[in-house]
Length: 126
Image (cartoon, rainbow, N blue to C red; front, side, top):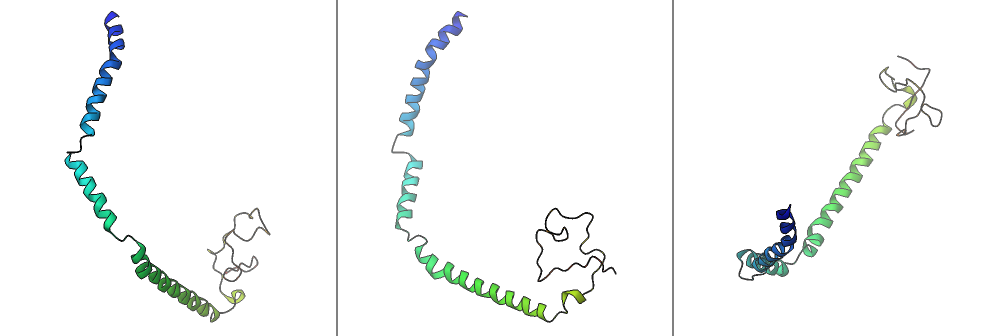
């Protein structure tokens, strides 16, 4: 019990001595790690950064990709215009399976329902 009390009283003094030694060791400027980090900072300061690359590479690439996506989107809907109307298409038994009505609307349409693409005739079976 006495030994524990003595250690508890002396602990702050020993930790302060260890902390001072560690701080002196880390604060030295003749460290290889610190020289390497300083060299990396100087090298980074001399580079131009993303400004030139952004204007010359990224923005034109995004413009080309956007144009391609728009072209493909229009081709897709042009293809749909050649298909028969939704009402005349074959509805297979595995499509639009309903075990119970949905809680919204008329109970037949899902959250992702799109009237241009989706069609469900409750009376029609194959």
